Image (tube, rainbow, N blue to C red):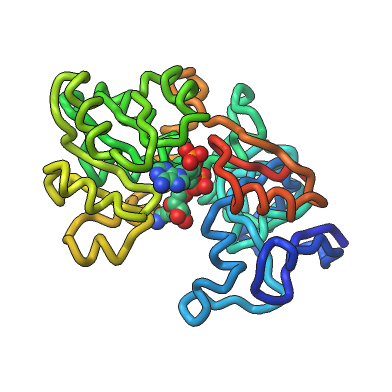
Length: 310
Ligand SMILES: NC(=O)c1ccc[n+]([C@@H]2O[C@H](COP(=O)([O-])OP(=O)(O)OC[C@H]3O[C@@H](n4cnc5c(N)ncnc54)[C@H](OP(=O)(O)O)[C@@H]3O)[C@@H](O)[C@H]2O)c1
């Protein structure tokens, strides 16, 4: 037996419990990981609250978590690329990384470089791949001025830094408590709220031009803002407002738009190891404190990732 997070009905974080479950047995082509770190993503909250009821099948008791970093505990008989003791990161097979032990497919795992912190490795899969997808979607180039909405969030902080890495001027929309961090990563911070459009235009003018692309990780009118700023629809990407994407014909490319998710995650991990990109870890929690972890994710907006460390 081992411990894992489960919920028996849709609801707020209070429906989450850590329970004893049968330790999963790897299929021939799977590995069993002892979880060292497993990131939280807003998708998990939305799923648990029942927002995808009827669209994404959920059977109770249901598990949470996809992002994972851990140590290979057992390998299926057909697995030849990994062995017990290997340190890896990536995605769990299906949901369930918020646990002591979880199954994974070797094709969705990367070897953890020793310089890559466990908590960072455990929070990378979704945010890194999605950030790469958004930057590719708007085709960031060195001469661009890119606006990133939600620039201190898990996806946004990586997308903004990747755009900087491409040589673009980057304006990051975030609350003021995150502005110092954005400046430290060469991102021009702009606070959201009344007068946002004027502040973005002024920041772009100071950078020598006007906004040429916008990556929206928030929703709530950023697609419309981008159009008002004169950005071409094909240079606007939202991962949070699919109605606006349909209505205005802008892009809605996220992780699933990528041809090779593993390569994208590996690319970001290499940049982190090289010091060119940072993934801040806002907070870590033990498995037992999973409710607090999701309450933090859902109530406030800490910069970077929240990670469970069983
Ligand atoms: N389609 C996909 O493939 C895909 C993949 C991953 C995520 N997503 C979606 O993308 C969204 C972001 O995910 P995430 O993991 O980055 O979430 P996150 O880490 O919770 O970050 C969200 C950020 O939004 C900022 N924010 C809140 N209100 C804002 C506003 N009005 N203007 C600007 N920024 C605001 C917050 O920062 P402040 O502290 O600065 O307020 C927070 O850091 C979620 O809806 C998620 O479901 C989609």
